[in-house]
Image: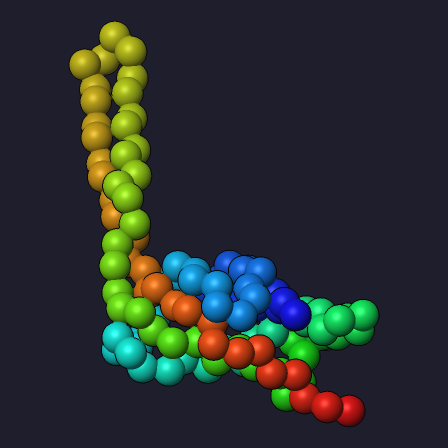
Amino acid sequence: MYAVIETGGKQYKVAKNDIILVEKLKAKAGGEVKISSVLLAKDGNSVHVGNPYIKGAHVICESLGQTRMGKVVAFKYKKRKSEKKKIGHRQDVTKLKVKEIEIAKG
């Protein structure tokens, strides 16, 4: 069984016991996060597709804490102008472990 969920403007394909990094959520380490924006779910031979989301479906995750991604460097340069600009950025993320995927019956 797997599901495609949406959080932080991005889509993730998740299955039970997967560990994913998502945009920062307000969740404490060890806390539970319920994501109800499920776009697609596959259970055995049946596929459930939402419009845009599946009603009554949600994914329950356990928060493993907050962390930061690796540094992304943006370097702007204009030749013969002595113009250089270096900017670094690290995105804050939340580490989640998928505990279960629930789809409403009916």
